Length: 96
Image 1 (tube, rainbow, N blue to C red):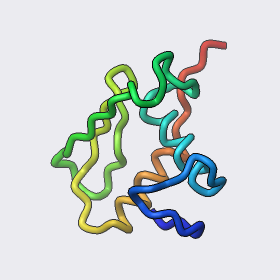
Image 2 (spheres, rainbow, N blue to C red; image 1 turned 180 degrees about the vertical axis):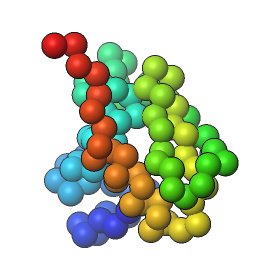
Image 3 (cartoon, rainbow, N blue to C red; image 1 turned 30 degrees about the horizontal axis):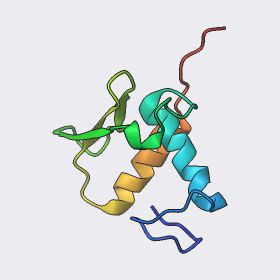
Image 4 (tube, one colour; image 1 turned 120 degrees about the vertical axis):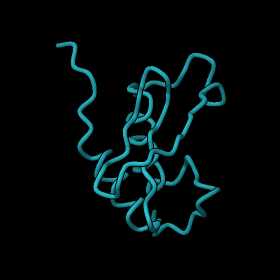
């Protein structure tokens, strides 16, 4: 993912608006919740597992288990595009 703010991939900042614009929707996509866990973010364990699906498939989040199924993509650009597409089309749970 390309951050125009200059933050490094391993050092995104929670005070940077550009980083937050991506990290908050990513957390909601992975956990199904827009709330911080009761024991804080350090208690959140995300598992990423590779799947043999082709490049046409999007990543899948299993929110009850904080598990992300990530197909093997041939490039970072395809990974970025598919992940952003999955996050943008995430609808979440509706209890209304």
